[in-house]
Length: 226
Image 1 (spheres, rainbow, N blue to C red):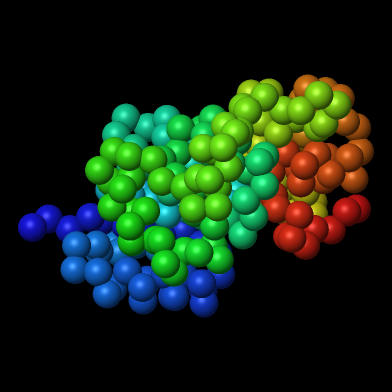
Image 2 (image 1 turned 90 degrees about the vertical axis):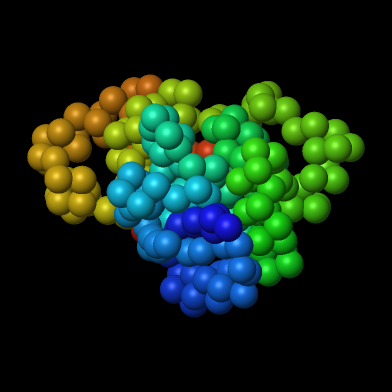
């Protein structure tokens, strides 16, 4: 019997090891790779072609939602199961809008992970029980609430602009961002100016607040505002 192949994308090694240990107990599931940031997840997915990608939202360099967005645009994408420490509506809303197959709260992952992988591999959707109950009781709207900051910047920004926005929110200087993305400093500055114009936000602190509110980075991630 062919095993379900899985790629784990989680930046905390101890969490990643725990997930791998859990899945090692399952006879029908095989972990074939691990990524510690979003950019690595995109690269490994293209190289290893897993059946299911288990992706944390709060990933350095490229967050899990943007990495999933890029992966799901490819010709034969895997099923994507999103992990998060938070189950707030904005995060669930973005997962649904992206076309990911499921959303799993980290606190319940130990009990639900293997079943979630089997369900999404079979073509079904899977949400943590608490999220599923909310969806059944009152479906989460894909529209942001009036007066709130946008929760789906993917509709406004290109993939490169999303990467720049995250690096700004993580406190990276233009030179460092240029090195990480293998582009020139002038190109970084151009993307930075463009996203400021698109969002009508013209300072680093404002962009950082936007990134947190929009789910580009989680509020628990420590950032440096310069």
